Length: 429
Image (cartoon, rainbow, N blue to C red; front, top):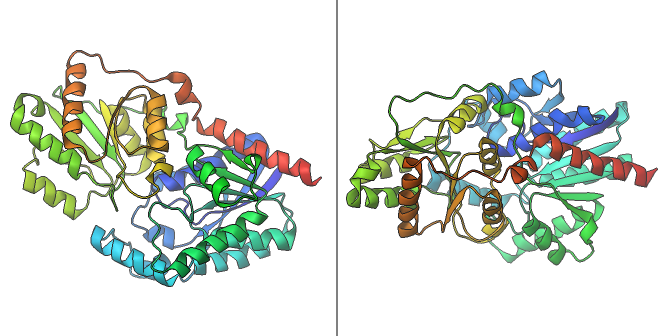
């Protein structure tokens, strides 16, 4: 087997969709002749507010070698107090901006430096064929460059999100933007291959950095793992109602308020419809959203299940009639493809997508079984509620494009990644 060193701050037992991409890649690499060794966080992972035992179990069953190390990043420091709870959005946003002002490129740079020392020791003691790093955090990319230079190994970087044009980037001064762009420029110069999750990110990188050629960047989208859906026992509900589910967290401009307000207006105009609809939420619903539900008097229609591990979340996904996705309007949101959207695809359920123009909207359109609105258009969302309900009553909800769905099988996507590994091995030989 060939050996690849994987640098991944976000890895089980941390939860949420960003973790799953690297987990699934490493899970299937061995089937294509590559043995991964993952460098990730230590106790930080166990105190992070999204903690998923089922994903950790999956990594253990796949017998993935994981080397853990701590660092002086905020999560590591907070870990001393036990499990970190997700704060109110206003608090999270404030500290996020303080962090982006103080730390360039991100507040994981101290962990990344520690990971570099650990990686250097591993690479000196054993022979590896490749370095793979998935970003963000982008400080990992800088570490990977140092290791590439020192050990003369090919490096492949995976962009789950954009760097300089990140949709949630905050640059308090022109210097902050200039410094980040300079770091990205220097890092990309040394990458042997750049993987991105959608065409919009690829196009932006090609415009920003003219030394990159079209062939330097490969698109490997997010996906779903068919194994996750095997032998899942759906939940049996007593009453026949249209059940709509949102899975994930709300932050920045990703909010349920327009969806809930549309439902409230519909409840006043057509109570005969809304009394037969339930809105389910999995993840961190947060106090401010619970207050909104109370203010709108929707507590009889809204069911908050809290944060669930991945296995249990899948069980709810397959048990619902329709799934809901929301991405707010904003800078660079056209380059965002939410990881959970592709797990939605794996359920083959119809999707209501309140999204702006961009990569996510394109993906949902190609899925076929979708109802698309603008993120904040309450009237439009209200019309979709009525349309979906009427189709549900007639057992006529749409079915997806199966060929498109199967293009996002995690095993297939890993095979594509490994082909890039092999290509660059041949190049250096």
